[in-house]
Image 1 (spheres, rainbow, N blue to C red):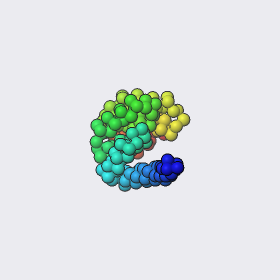
Image 2 (spheres, rainbow, N blue to C red; image 1 turned 30 degrees about the vertical axis):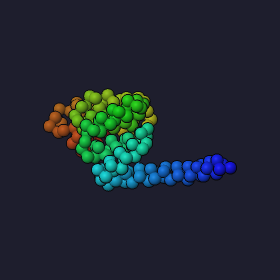
Image 3 (spheres, one colour; image 1 turned 60 degrees about the vertical axis):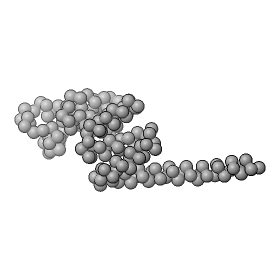
Image 4 (spheres, one colour; image 1 turned 90 degrees about the vertical axis):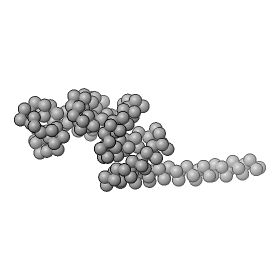
Amino acid sequence: MKFARISFSFWLAIFLFIPALIFASETESQHASLLLKQKKYRAALEILENLESQNPSDFEIKLKVVSAHIGLGEEDAAENKIQKILILNPDDFKAEYILAGLYLRKGKFQEAEKIYLKVIKKQPESPLAKEAQKKVHLLKKYQESSSLDSIPLSAFLATDAARAFSK
């Protein structure tokens, strides 16, 4: 009889406690996402690294950690994190897309283009593949245009000139 009470109490505690933990993690993740949107990258990173340690297989949290590193200008840390994600989950085309964007920022245009083409091949109908197609198109236009040699690619991608080339 004592075992039955312990067992019932144990299971009752488990069923009440686990949803509370899940809810707390979701709330923390939402808070970190809000901080990322507000460009409060350091605060978001602290929360996300804590969540990542509690949920080591959650790739969405890992990608948010990458976003925080990028926001802080810690591109090498972001790249290392993405490389680790891709080792664990080589088919994560979202991580590949972000890696290609990092390569663009670092001036590694050929590597970026190669990864964008992989994203397009893996998920041709996805919104990320459509964005990757635009970036590949703009990269080619940038490389073909001799009149843009003095403009850095990052500035080109952010300008109306890039929008004009994409039409």
